[in-house]
Image (tube, rainbow, N blue to C red; front, side, top):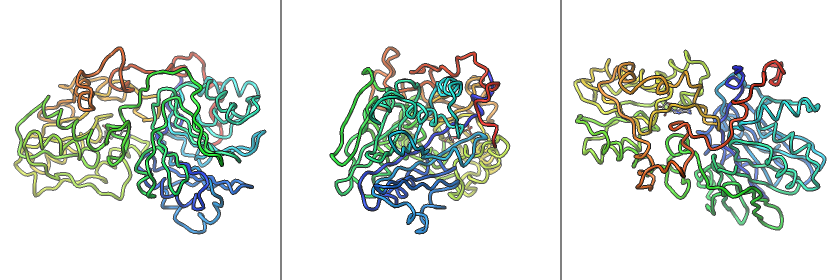
Length: 482
Ligand code: AMP
């Protein structure tokens, strides 16, 4: 299989859209700021002022660009969509920054996408053979090209036409000269919620983006649902065959902000319950329960409460650096763990520690943190991970790497324990994970409620690009322009 599948940009992103509000651009900027944890590489906003579209797409954080009145002033109009982007591979190109925009037969069309398609390269190959000219290397452009090419008379039918040809994970917002459109893929893998402010509709990845602008949460977009918001109000369309939803379980474990709600559950409460469940499954004696901040904090509180062991901040986080994964190279990623975390020496010397993190991917973070704790004199370090071992790669946009790089895909827990130089290690069981999320029977293999492929290898969609024998690289599918 060509390496390209792993080299092209993958993205876990955040999307936001608002229709008919006089402060559309500023509200979108605020919404994107609340979604910044979903992507820190680049941000963009496209607005429509009933005549023209206006676009700003920049590398960097939302606050680097979208707080300036000069920028927001240019983004005229009552409707807007926005995107924060996260990419871990080489494709850090401005032309991949979303929302993408094109002038189509029916007028301007802007689109912002969270998730990864699993047949984007196969479809792209066909489109290129037919003469399509791709401007970016992002799979979102495949959707745009399919909409452009559709012969249907209305935009929404063109969208349905395009979406019926793609596989994978997609939570989309699109802006045309008439409407704001929101779409969630047939399994609802990535999140999308509907809110309301001053009687105007909002679509966004997480409820925390509604909170920041004082908007009211109305409901989640259903799996396989398309909503069309225009001057007449909102219409819901369900064009795909009805299937059971399978939202991504990793949103609960790591991605979403703890103050967001997803599937009717508080992310914070879920994480606390993961910690509690792990304390039930893997108790051990210690002086302190210490989280790897920030993502390990709620789980460590849950573990400590149940185990009746004091919770302490033994690792202090520097908040002026992004998430570890933001560094594409392994060497830099290893360094950035130290940039981000330091040990609280006063607490650690001579103590037995239970160290809580939400997941182990490559093992970089845990190795460094355990080394720091040992250097500070920790007597024992018992690693407790509040998710099961990640054994399978992700293809839906959360960017867990290829299988060879996944520590748990290639090592037993005992081997991992030796590798990390921990005194013991335990992972939350898959049934424990489900139990902590309100499914007392655990995971039903015939009808899993979540997309949990990272742990089980059970992928809900076809993985056409991955299974294809096409030599995508030889067909110059990805750009020669750097
Ligand atoms: P690693 O250092 O490669 O083992 O990654 C594990 C750390 O990264 C944990 O502290 C997690 O909180 C965090 N993490 C887990 N999954 C992801 C992801 N897909 N993207 C970014 N960070 C992640």
